Image (cartoon, rainbow, N blue to C red; front, side, top):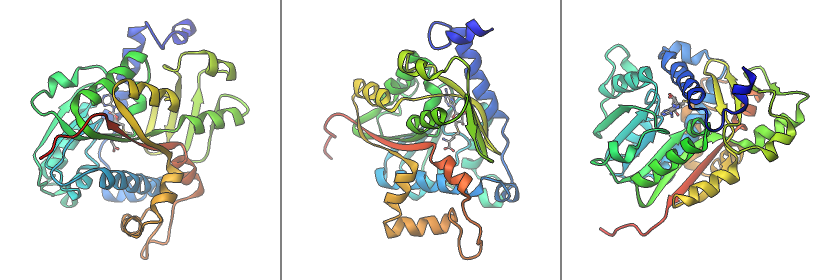
Length: 326
Ligand code: SAM
């Protein structure tokens, strides 16, 4: 019922758990694609571009031997990136049991997929759990502190209630060493709200995605309502069909600061791409990943995929304090 939806932000634990389960089920049900299926995806170049953005972030902020905590690690799509960065230890946590199983298979070397038969040089621990609910500092007391924490395309799932958003940041803060870095990607609320305002109603999109807000989110409610629990439905062809939550960038910055996480930058994906494509090593990486097409494959990112990239931002935060010497 409508009244139930209206008060979803706070104090309605049942409702919130329902939606959390919906997100978990959605990702759990998504099975691994074959290489051929992946290559024929309508958003293949967007996926490659997102991989490039994550690779650049990882290379910028990781040093050889680092201990890494990957929140909402999914199927372990970033394992190879961490391997290239020569990390020393990896802990991955995800709420979707199916994804953690896929991640484990990938880490152990999937005998059925020769391209996945890879042995990683770092030890890893994989855990199924809700990163925005459980006290990860207790679960991971023996593994901490971490040098880098990463949360890729997933932090917005914590913004359903203030309690969960706080738990997410408290977990990161408690587990990072002083001077450690928290990197990630998430929807850019500024872009989404701007697009909503430019639309005639409560939804907008293009050939590969759509976003639809609930009726309660009129222009007025953004300024007056709580900055938590602002829900919309996100559909991305061949990838996502899930409830998600707006993360107002200024509230994110202020809340993170309360947990001793200082903003280094939060940058829209378009600006991030333009900035790092000025550097030859990342141009080369883009070519190798084939995000903008390569010599063999003349196809490239479509304008509609590029518009989806614009819906996201990349961020880095630094845990306050002096790193220990040695
Ligand atoms: N980080 C991975 C990547 O970049 O490939 C996966 C990104 S996928 C878009 C979002 C992930 O967030 C899913 O694997 C989902 O199961 C996970 N997730 C959503 N809510 C979560 C929660 N409360 N705790 C842990 N993981 C969560």
